[in-house]
Image 1 (spheres, one colour):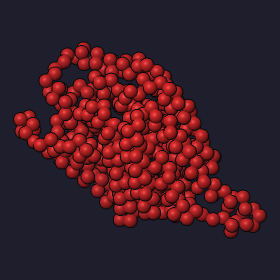
Image 2 (cartoon, helix red, strand yellow):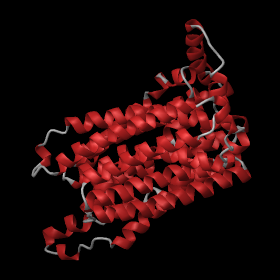
Image 3 (cartoon, rainbow, N blue to C red):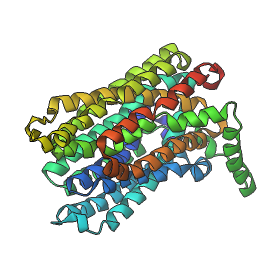
Image 4 (cartoon, rainbow, N blue to C red):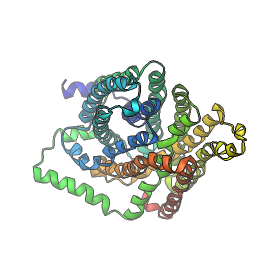
Amino acid sequence: MSDDTESARPAVKPALWTSSTYFAEGLPWSLLHQVAGELLTAVGLPPRMVGYTSALHLTSSLKFLWSPFVDLFGTLRRWMLWTQALMGAAVMVLALAASQLAAIPEPIAADTTWVWLLLIVIGVLSATHDIACDGYYMDALDTEDQARYSGIRVAAFRVAMVVGSGGLVYIGGRVGWLYGFGAGALMLVGLAVVHRMVLPRGDNERRQAKVQTAWRQRLGHVWAAYKLFLIQPHVVVTLAFIISFKLGDALMFSMSKVLLRELGVVTADRAVINVSGTLAMIAGAMIGGAWVARRGLVRTIVPIALLMALSEPVYLWLAFARLPGYWLEPFGLGYLYVTPSLFWISATVVLEQFAGGMATAAQMIFIMRRCHPDHKAAHFAFATALYAAAQTVTGTYSGILYETHGPVFYFGLASVICIPSLVLAGMIAREPSQIQ
């Protein structure tokens, strides 16, 4: 189709394309880090195997290596369309592998190589899609609109998490994992088709269609992208804040499903709890984004960081609920052990997820404020890769830490590890130039 025909199409409102593109970004993330973890949990694999799914964040951690090339070759819109279609195909193959794994009588001894290989492929495609999607968002909107639509952006991502961790997990637990992952594959292919028809061409696409550069100039662009990010004022505080801000949340996320399994919550019920928690996260993201847009990041970053830190210990309460059985059984009083009800477990998840949603909105706005106009996609990819690297390291080891030290120590550590981010948030608030 010609560019003239594309230009003749009515403009799609930013709220609509922001919602659909970030849903397309959130769905593969959910498949990788939620649905896959629920699959391994449901078939009975040990906590360390579930924790290893956090290693899939490595694809996001390394995306900065090829993010400048996404800026240079092709267009951001085209990158989004192709990666969405390819992810759909890969998830369909994963649906077959997941179905075979679930059918094995003793999956703890099963060969999961193909499942992991497919997850890695999806992870690389998902990271590449993230680069293009984030760059497209920043290229199409000015600074004020980026803050205005940040809540919608985060909310759409979280809606995809509801669909994945709630709907697809419920289908997998009740009907079969072939249908759970298969539904996700069909949605990704459908999004690619719809976006091909309605997604407007952004400034990046029009600009790249006209610019032809030599290889030396392109490599110079790559080096300039990294250099400009690393020489910005207060870069040490910026990097430390990005890495540490959601570290406690990452630990919570890695083993929460294992803790719920040990509390007797079955897969279908975990799917319902996932929906409640994700809806709370969406509400938190919307409120957090609106608050930052209205009051500014300088005034809101410390209160939001404090709210997140105070919400982390709620999982510790669930972990303590397992202790009476250990303490009282030697005295013949084990019958006094009481498991928290499904209502209180859900309420705990909802509270923590609401605060986490507010923190996510604030974090994304902070990162966007640190991106140079000439390297938006590359800088955003680099910054989010640092965050993903922290998740990779902590999450991959989380299962081993949980097995060796138990849930109380594990969630206690998750509660205190976010304290440094409070100090850094205060430093950032005292230097408003960092987040203008």
